[in-house]
Length: 408
Ligand SMILES: C[S@@+](CC[C@H](N)C(=O)[O-])C[C@H]1O[C@@H](n2cnc3c(N)ncnc32)[C@H](O)[C@@H]1O
Image (cartoon, rainbow, N blue to C red; front, side):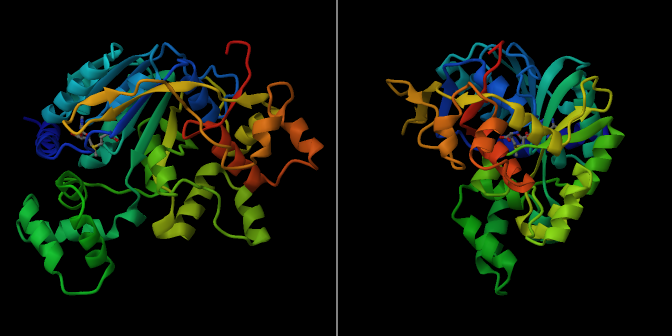
C-alpha cells in the first residue's frame, strides 16, 4: 500500500467512525433548475450566467454525509458524482438520496488520489477535505486534472489563524499517544486547569455531538493554510485563486468579508491598488482569528476565459440588469425517527427584504442597469460598499437578485 493510500485509509476509517457533518436537519430543492447555476456564475462576476451550464458535470470529492445530495438538489439538471473514502458517510448519503428520490446523483467510494478523472467536470466542490492529507498539493493536482480547462473549483481549507488551539491540542494528544482516543480527549477537556482560550473552546465543544468534537480535536491529519500558502500550493497544481466564496457556513459565522478591516483612507486606497491575492493576504493578516474562512473559487491557469479581478466583478454588477428572485423550493425536514419528511407545500426561497439596500428589491425590476438605479439615487457607492452589496444581494448565500439575460 502506498503512503497516500495509507493516509486515505486512515482518514476513511476515522470518518466512518465519526461521519461528519451529521445529517442536515433541512434539505431544499429550488423549483427553478437554472437558479443555482446563475447564482454561482454571478458570484464569479458572470452576470450572463454562462460560466457553469445547467446540465454541468459536477464532482464532489470528500462529500461526507450531505454535500453531494445538497449539490444534486441545487443543480437538478446536472449529473453529480459524490465520492468519499468513508463507507459509512456514503451509506448515510445514499439513504437520504433514496428517500428524496435524487436521480442525478452517483456515489463512489474512492480516494481523491486514485480517482483518475481527466478534464471531465465543469464544477468541482471540495470543502474541508484536502487539508486532511499529508500532501494537500497532491490532491489539489488531482482536482485540477479532473476539471475541464474552463471549469470552476470550489475549495475550502483550514485557516491557520483559526486553528491555533486545535493544532496545539492535537499535538499534545499525539505526544501522549492518545490521538485517536475520544474519551481520553473529552476527559482532558473537562479537567484542564489553566484558564486559557484552549480550555474555553474545549469546554464549549464538550456540549456538541461527539462527531463534531472528534472532527475538530482528534483528526488524524490536519494541514493549515494562509492565503499565501494556499496561493502557492494552488499555483504548483496549475490553479489560481479566482474569487472568494461567501458560503453558507462562512456567512453564518460572519467570516466571509474580504474587505480590508480598517477605516483609514490611505490604507484602503493602497490596498485597493493591490492585486486580489495580495489584498486578501493583508485582510487575513489584519483580521487574524476573525479572518474569513479560506473558501475560494479557483480556476485552471490554462483556463481560456478572461480572468476577472474583484473590481471587474463590481463593474459587471453595476452593468447588470437585475430582478428579484421569485423561485420557491421543496423542503424536507429530518423527522424524529431519522428519516426525511417532505413539507406539503413549496416554500418561497427568499423571505423578507434583502439584508442590504432594501430599496433595490422594489427598484431592480429587470428594466434598467444597476448603474442607472444608483445614479437616480445620487451616485454609485464607494468601492467597499459596492462590493458588499454585490455579495449580499446576488450570490448563492444571498439569492435576492438575479440578472435578466436572454438565455434565462
Ligand atoms: C470534514 S468532512 C467534510 C465533508 C463535506 N465536504 C462537507 O463539507 O460537508 C471531510 C470528508 O472528506 C473525506 N475525505 C478526506 N480525505 C479524503 C480523500 N483523500 N479522498 C476522498 N475523501 C476524503 C472524509 O472521509 C470526510 O467524509
